[in-house]
Length: 259
Figure 1 (cartoon, rainbow, N blue to C red):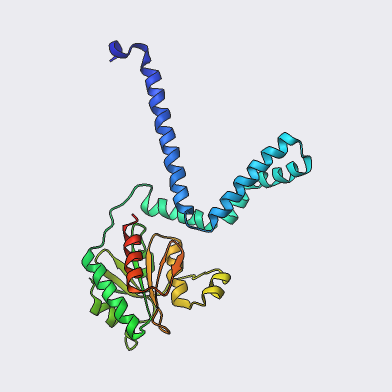
Figure 2 (cartoon, rainbow, N blue to C red):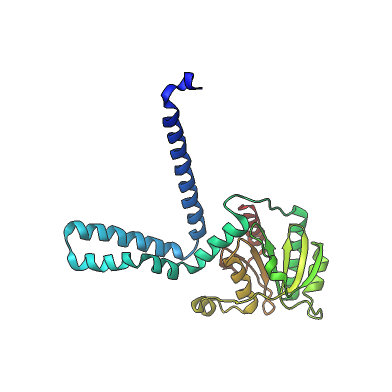
């Protein structure tokens, strides 16, 4: 080996390490960007970038008062990050702890999806309130501690039976992992939704719980309104309501294929 490369082995090794370092940093930045993508926090990120740019301009232009204000903001940067990006930091740590940076195996069959769709539209016609949570790559088994374990294949008839008003299990959510209904009567802990969102959307506890689950994970929530029969999908902390069959199927496939 030394005859071929001579004294260039250390240089080649340093170059290789530098390339790996750059790739790791680039992937980390991309991973963080995906956490902020499609969230309101992306506007805060842009605000921080604007402050940094203005700080540089103020320094070169010798605008002392403006520079001192920006220096104060930068000096407390870590505290501001911890306060403003608390949900994103929690989501980041959850993803790293449960799913890591690499993709894990996750799948649900087309047959199971069809069973879910069939049940959802029948419940919509009958105005049966329902909350169906589909786990993806981030584990949600912590939700089933106080629930009723089922562990049965995904079937429309079973979902209809669970959410029937006469069934003791109809309150709470159903968790689906892969092609199986794992648990029912799941109560989502610490449901927190912004007051503006609640006031604007005029949603109930079932809808708020559906949104809350998707804020800290990559799960998909399907909500059927008991009052109107309208169908909603929550994903990445956002909810789209009053979906017709065509739009619902499109959103389902978009969310499920986004792996």
